Length: 75
Image (cartoon, rainbow, N blue to C red; front, side, top):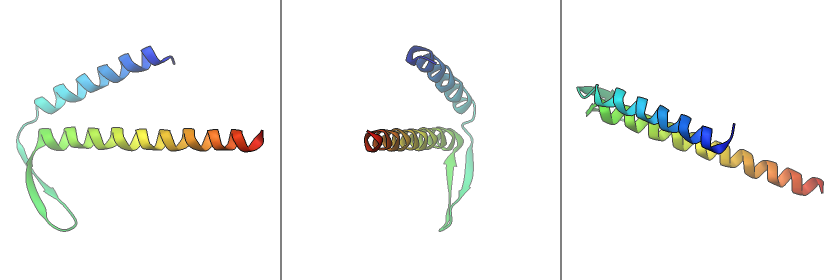
């Protein structure tokens, strides 16, 4: 898939997440290991989406770096 198609797909996915988050604004209880807090569901949804994006980006970067290193060591 080319970068333009990936960008369009990412934009559509971001809009779907944003619409879903805006429709869910009620406060919810979030349980942590060390406590609990009441947060608006919109922040929980958007925060989860951002953390998922960051994790996927970091894993992708790590995979690309390891591929480059293995190509350099073979030559």
